[in-house]
Length: 327
Image 1: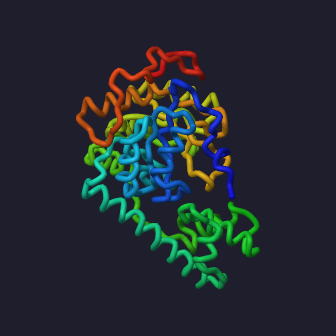
Image 2: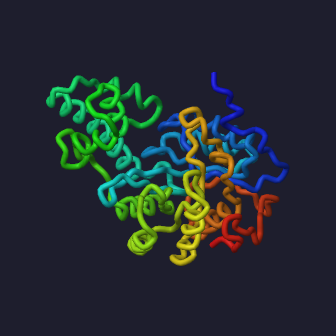
Image 3: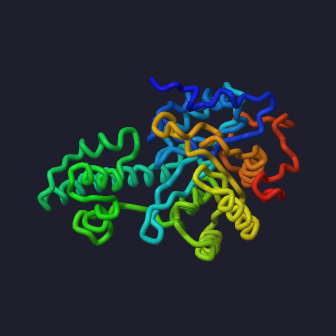
């Protein structure tokens, strides 16, 4: 049995919590904790606020927000939407969404159904190419994670069909290759508009994974800002200090909010601790305050447990990375 204290980092308790985590997952997508357990774990980790951002679903948010009402931890309704950008999968975080919004729920269901159909068709295509493979083998590799093409690549490597991930994609899984199957996806603009329609604010998740140079990131933010992008996730476990500094500076340049989170999945990613990432992540509470104020100014939904005149307020907090006031 996994020692949950290693996941939660109970030693991080502090009397006046000023840290937050705005990127987490529960059992409703590919995390190992229920939404209720997640809120309790946030309190044990000494966090002041937390958002649940399951992949392409808001089914766990009712339980999550209900758990927040009985906790000192402030909770924020969120979602992480999969989308297509430049030939790769990118993620958009939506905060303060109306969990009962009909078109949001319908579109998220289409995304999940499209992914499931895609996985079945990839298996069929590989079988037609003479490769012995079953979907349950791929699911076993994925475990609690959402099944994706990297898991197919791993099975192909284990079977000796290919020698590397690059070869698996180049020969079979990349767009235009014989086992590729296109599925329903949203464009960045569609995701931003959908989140806004559901009463939320769109934030670009972990820009590091976009694999872009700074000039391309800038042009991308220009495009997404015009579509209604509100923020960028600058604080993330895989971001270097230099990357975090770059994203904070770009947020200032484009008048975007800064957010951050651990991308916590529980035992699925045992090296990522809730609130603390790989140990050095610190997302200041002031970022949650700014996001909350922006949502309230626009009359948005999804916030509970707000502390008026809270001891958690952190006026004039300085960025640990740049030493400058955060945007």
